[in-house]
Length: 457
Image (cartoon, rainbow, N blue to C red):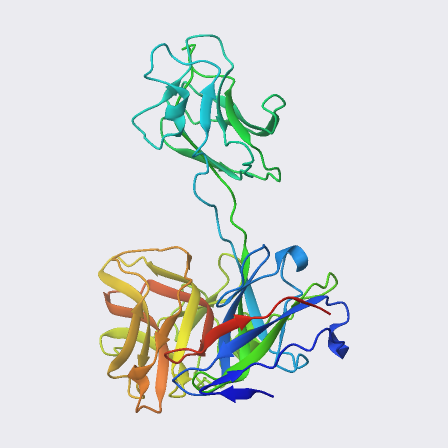
């Protein structure tokens, strides 16, 4: 139930802890408003929600649950406004990488410095590759240290080091919280050049003091380093797509809930159930028996064999798809594999590869296109690569490509995968497309409103 105020519906206030049949073992939930769009009410629409296992302020599509959910997010569930009806969802854990250099704003020091002021310890942390620290010409070991300051600690997970030639060979990265007792974090060997070198490593301790302890180098007594950088690891998060049975009209809102906090839960994430179409090519042609599909003749054949379509099991062992149908379709070699229904959609091809080993001819790109029933004209095209004789290797794609107004007025549209703008003498070129997700898309998309406070179940 909702109460409409002007053009916006006010969400019903939370009624406190509940006990629902399906969620025995779940401990927490939060409510969230999905806001309608000027594109009108939508059905079976996928909405993005990002779940973070860290503390933060909930806003827009991002919700922060700390360490109350499992590290693999297997206990994440979404429900409709009644808090009972489970919604289909799929998730992918996004590796967020590493932050920026945190060796700033503190104080540098060293076991010794070359006489004068041209090679002081601070030069190893000044972000200037034209200046460097050097120890005095005394026997090793030597160290250069950074104090982050009173009350400041950081958990280092990545080191970037630019040594001076061969003057640094074996070294240790150490951490301390009292400037006297030092823990070894990593022990490494430089490669003998002045190039940037980097290492990532496990470390669960936040330290105030960090130092590089040089234990060996070339025949010179001194040790010298151009630059030192340390980074913390950014927290991973779960990028979730939630399949909404319906989204409201413009500026109206509907509540959903995210549940978490069950140590015994197993994931129910399913792209096949959540997306409009999902294909991983592990079940022969079954991937194309969904609502978007138009039947076509294909064969599972060896990579070197000619045919309408070819499947292979490269890289991670999962089935992958390539198209090599001889012929000309507005200047491209294509294989029609799916039919769109006339609605807007977004497509993500997570893995793709383009390869050409021909001795005569050229191939300029691997592409995904949208065409009408007769294959002409191209209404939409996305080229994944460009080049001549090429082998891109397996490439990861993370960007959703959208199609909206271009398909208005057409009822028989086909999504095609293949080469574009190519001429070859022996057809020894191939494309692979794998892990294809297609979801509904309107512009503007349904939006995000407020998040409710965490409720204990």
